[in-house]
Amino acid sequence: MITTTNERGIMASVGTRLKTAARDMALFGVGILTVLVAPIVAAAQVRMTVPVQSEPIALRGATIHTVTNGVIENGTILFESGVIIAVGTDVTIPEGTRIVDVTGKHIYPGLIDAYTTVGLSEIGAVEMSNDVREVGDFNPNIRAELGINAESRHIGTSRSAGVLTALTTPEGGLISGMSSAMALEGWTWEEMSLEGAAALNVNWPDPNPRRRGFGGFGQNQRERVPYAERVQQLKDFFAEARAYRDAVQAGEEVRTDSRYQAMIPAINGDIPVVIAADGAAQINDAITWASAEGLRIVIRGGRDAVHVADRLAAEEIPVILTSTMDAPSRDYEGYDGAYRRAADLHEAGVKFAISGGSSALYTDRLGYEAGVAVAFGLPEEEAIKAVTINPAQFLGLDDRIGSLEPGKQATLLITTGTPIDMTSDIEQAYIQGRELDMNDIQKHFFEKYMTKLNQRLQMVM
Image: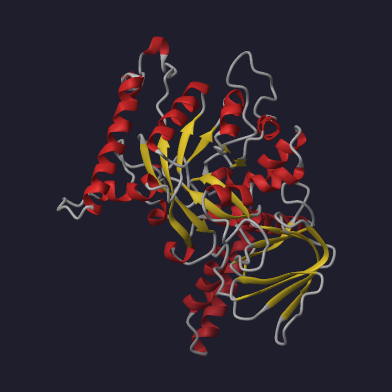
């Protein structure tokens, strides 16, 4: 390391002070490691997990956006033990309630990212920090919650952007596994889990896979398998799972198979099957297959969903749009194809949610994805629904989250404006009544390097 004469003098001075401090602490019986290590540990702690709600809390004076029951001006929201007790303008506040004045602020439900890998993926370029996909084509027994890293730095940045619930989803194969609905607060995955098996994920084969590499060389071997054969493999697996279910229900002696066992809630219609499909042919074939199977489905991706919007609306099949900020994927498409996709689906009567694009790194831009849709024609009220109540309804979570109503979890945001506008600030958030530590790695580094800059300026001046 190269240092200037001035820097060497400063370091020598610091070293002398440390030695003096060490001698003094030794005289008083104080361990130098305790004193020196404690600040380092404190600095490394980016956010602190907070305890469960221990007292009733009333947020008073804000504009409350319930999502399902309109907007309440100068309202109060009361919650206890993590559950909303009352919302309105004439709420009776019990004795012993902690009252928080939020006059001039806005309160929204926490945003829900319906498709993300947050908690499973940390650094894209570091393979050992990614636990997104398993080996093989059929892994319905994989539950994302079991792989969640509760210490992920993406959790803090996501919460600072308003995302309080994530549908963390495995990837790969024909059947990837189960999405898990995770509240983004807690020490462990068990504490964070809202629904371990919220949806079964199917990746519909592509009838027109793009060739990879020069002249097709280097093309993925799996893409060479004929489309019809891949679809048949999927049909056969569902048929086997259904036969397994019927045998179990009939009391027959069968060899336990965790893969088929995991399929039963989806086959019975208790949970949705989320089908990843982008092209119009993919979407149409997936709907036809699901109808024959008697499945409750949600289309994820939906690049060409507008072209089959009439069928989606008629059969009441919702769509999870994976991004509104994509560039055109075809030469003939307009620049705003992805930007206005949500508005076009809304006009066609198709129910939809908007996600942050699957990557854990992009979960914190969920609100901006919805904001872009507003800029290109989607009503703001519908954009808010697309990241709150709509995904909650599609995935069977609307009895707990997605709107601000008595009986639902107190998972909410206190903001200076709409959370889908990047000029708004999210000042505080609560998950199940827990008042969150709003620090995150980005804020931590901002403070750290601003401190460094200020110290350098003081040295120079």
